[in-house]
Every structure is written in structure tokens, then in C-alpha cells.
Length: 81
Image 1: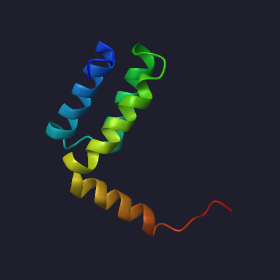
Image 2: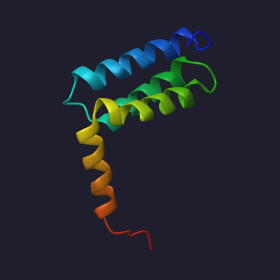
Image 3: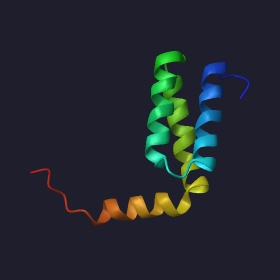
Image 4: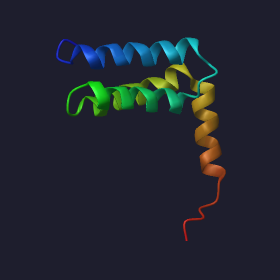
């Protein structure tokens, strides 16, 4: 943690807080908002780190929602033809 910028650190705090205390905001939206903040105000590739950390934390902090979302995506037929 000592090697990331204060911006990415703050964005991660925001993301973790939202995942823990704002269940009305979908987990993917939380991640997207944080990635966009990191892109706008953080370092060159800081958004990649933020995305990776929050994606890894989501199943721990929002396990029922993440599992339901992933199960729903598996059930949808591929219509990309």
C-alpha cells in the first residue's frame, strides 16, 4: 500500500465503503465509478490496480450479489452472431 498514490488509496477506500455500506448501489457500478475516478485523477495505470483490487474484494464483500450476477450471466444465451 505504501507504493500506490494517495488518489488510488482514497478511491479504494471509497469503493470498499460503498460495497460495505451502500447495498442499493450494484457492485459493478461501484467498481466502474472507482475506476473512472482513478482514470480521471490518479496515475497513468492506477485504474488497473483499483479495478483488480475491487474485483477481488467484491466476492468477499458482496458474495450473494456477485454469485447471483455471475450465475445470471451464465444462464443468458450468446446472441453475438
